[in-house]
Length: 135
Image (cartoon, rainbow, N blue to C red; front, side):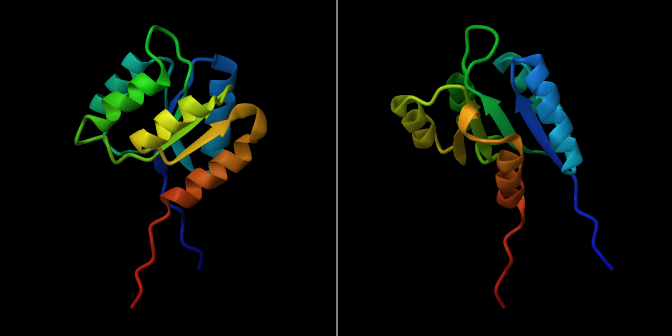
């Protein structure tokens, strides 16, 4: 008998509405519960209001003055959120920007033009699977 996969909750922080919708649909088809935000303030409010967010899909460029990097700094400064896996997806990937994210402890950085949604979702799914304990 096949065991049903546990639904994981992911926060998608993406300002482009058509892309946000496509990401939501793909994630939901892959057994994720999706919460969305378009800026840092909305994302922080979701983290405060919704328990059990298990991963974050984050675009670097967002609506408002704050970027994805600003959000990651806030996330890593909070003891309740700093261990949430972070997957950064951006249109550009300057080496300096990528290094800043890596220093802050993100899980992976993707350039949108180089990666398909399916590939990113597969990586996130694998990253959230519980580790098997050796006997």
